[in-house]
Image (cartoon, rainbow, N blue to C red):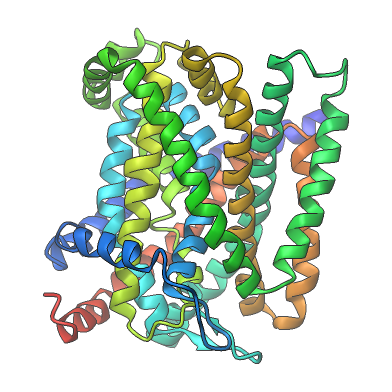
Length: 463
């Protein structure tokens, strides 16, 4: 069995290196740069408007038509999928394997990604459909199908297929693993972990999560939106406050941290003591983890936004700008600062996860904070499971029909048990690979539909 897993890991490593190689990085950054230039840096011009739109709807009661959710609920559902282990475990792993300079490249990908996400959301709302139940359905597979010539329709099928395969790892197993890691850390810090009890506790957590996830997902898009609408603001504010506290307490270290970020972006060896010497490794880790976190380029967030009652694609697209800004520029940056400012030891060249981020908090606050970090990380991961469950259901619906959605959601929910009881090094790697594969058909579609996007912007007088 070990030989088989080792062989799978080797094959996946080769595929991953190709998927996230120089051509992929050029495509991801290139499409973002193209859209940025063609829209005249819309992510800068309309960033204040995005905050105004979101904050203006924050306290407005959600009253929606049948088969739709409010614009704010759509944003929260999309954010529920992006604000998760990518912000916590993903950033920790990126810094450990690529050095502090990965944070700079994460910022670059996020800056361009704000425009990419705007385009994805706008096109998803513009080309969406209603299914047999009257629910709005949309996303990359639909703007490929309804916006491009038939010869490109195979890209829609590829995207949906990769989407179904990705959700079990990216959206579920890795998220549950983060939950068990944070809970185990809290129990161990107070010496409450029974001897050899980690597996039993993991199994109990996995079963509980599977039941709760199934109850929410089987309730449909409105129930998912109602849960995320309440959960996302709470968890984001809690995590931001905890992280800001670490930064403030270690404020004297902040200038040195930013020096290491900018220096490490172009000369990683100078910051990591020669352990990480490749400029491209730093860039690759930063870009890939940035996309893993904010999903700009993957197109997944647009699936949630397409379910909104909003009839204005451009207006909903503005929410996409806010989504990437909060996810990466704020939350991911704070995670990086927690790790780099706190003084916790980073073993460069060795993969890391949520434990490294938790260590940054405990070094600063003490072991009591593991309780709060466990609660916060549970909320992050649980919300991501819900968001990706919706994405997988929509992809499954596109590939087959609505009759496959409930069986898919049952299997998807049960995956939580595996995520809570297994080592997930290989699953993390495979999830990373499928993320890259999802991006390819989506980026091709965004490039081909950029003219349509410009037309919609001119009609709205945004250009």
